[in-house]
Length: 498
Image (cartoon, rainbow, N blue to C red; front, side, top):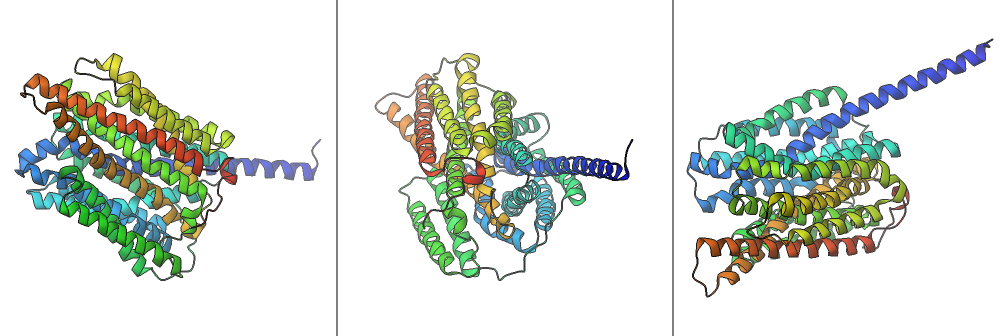
């Protein structure tokens, strides 16, 4: 026999359970929407690379101009991320997310319809600007939506998998679209992603109540944007010219001066663009360092392994993209499993340190390739090991980099791992391309070049670059072990002095 009080309690429990199910279902849709947007932004860093030869032939621009198709995007994306993260905090993350989506889709369509080089470059620069608005907005919406530890770990595991695998998706999708349709579809495809995410976002995303608006830190904005643009541009110039080139040196010196000035300004500002407490936190600081150095390694692997597969193994663009597919699968599974099950149990330090070390072991193995190597026996196994390691890093690092940030700082805290990954993506190709060129040239020095010898020199350059990558990964593991605090996420945010 049920008493009224028992009946009421049972009804209350049923109502609470139904509300929880409804909340979880809505959160799944939020994750799908944000995941689509993140995939669009990340894959755009690589999807155009495979389309470049076709775009160059179609529009008739020079080899010297070709780098600007990539550089224009990375300059505005990397330079505006911190500002965009703070704007998301000030005017609302859902609003900046939807503006970023609409803008990204519009300029992607314009870029796909380009009738000349200038139009394409302008569209790519605008893509970077809207991507900078979109990326931290998406990550901060993820941060403020998923607050329960278990659900948060699952969400960040999946989101980190997308961030880690997006570059490989871009290579595959770019190869398919270029080979079977036209290079322009590498830009048009963003419209589809943006429409799906925009419709879903307008329905399921919720903005938390914004704090009272404060003035934008204009001196901090100027020095941050100027310093980041100079830094990314300097790395880009180094990759195509040299580290000793006057423009490269001037840009890197300017970047150093502006970024040091930025830190000084932020310490004194009453409304800083980047509150220094965010990077003084050991968990966030260590996670962003891991994202930076993993970005160096990851984009280096994509660049030089793509060269190797196409130039030595004679793979087509589609086959090159498919060759990265197993790594993509391992990254996604590892990031999801690590973020869902391991992070909450063992904490970020062992997961991130082990991931970097495992990726380093994979690169040691990869450095043994030769002109006679086969993909199935000599490339695929180490590629899977690298994916296993990197997948362990991305979900955990993104989770810890945004955990514990206050509501008013969620946008700029979410910009930081994007900034770190972007700078790593610019530094990696610049540094490793210099090493590749020097190693290949030294191999050919004093010898009469032949096609066979040039192939040997190219592989020597590739393997030398891979050696540098594994040193970077092992050094990253050691640094992360030192910087990241032990314990679970809740206990991992300890402040260090600045």
